[in-house]
Image (cartoon, rainbow, N blue to C red):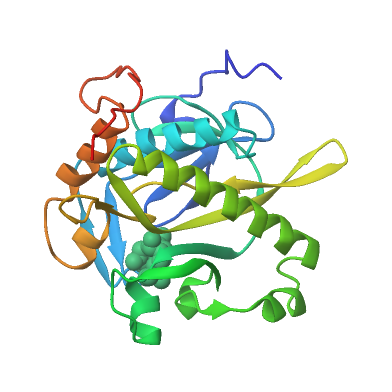
Length: 265
Ligand code: TMP
Ligand code: ASP
């Protein structure tokens, strides 16, 4: 399929497939594709807290593009095809597996609260957790037993998801470490992608400071959505700093990827 010259569909005539809290999915230019649009909406605590933060969508589109393109390049399959414009990217249509996969390297957030571990404590090893993606139930944590018993994913698929999660964690940890940022934890989603009769699990949705915990290695400053969750302010500034360190110029319509900037320790 030629993804280089997609049929142009005016915004007003596009079919909206799904609207989430921070993104909208539109029908794509070719069968099997979708357009993922990043909004400026920020939500927390299952949307009980909501604000529009101008510029957040543009930054997340860029940062997520950067991460997904690099994952594709190292052979970690994702739904990402290419970025279309400031707020949108072309993706492959997948069947989303209804799990939020969280990988943790350092204690924070709900793990710190649930188990009474001080935030910032290095974990003995990376820990993978699964949450059932269901807003009505506020995304409850589930075990592999629940996942297989209720048929959300098979044991083989859980193995594949965990292998992907570890590869993504290793890649992201190294990427961010190189620019002076610690990856505390992150959330990823996966989907089933069919090519002819073959199905594989790919990384889907987005990976951005909305879905990661990131902190500056030297100052420990938070560089992620906790700034919004905890009313700290400075969210766009922090996301811009992440984009700058990754070598993504955030200003202007056509930023150039100059490559990561080495931060000396
Ligand atoms: P938690 O500590 O609140 O469980 O969050 C773990 C990680 O998952 C953190 O990087 C933030 C991310 N996350 C999401 O992307 N979406 C969510 O709905 C939640 C609760 C967390
Ligand atoms: N994204 C989730 C929500 O709105 C929660 C979060 O990221 O903290 O509700």
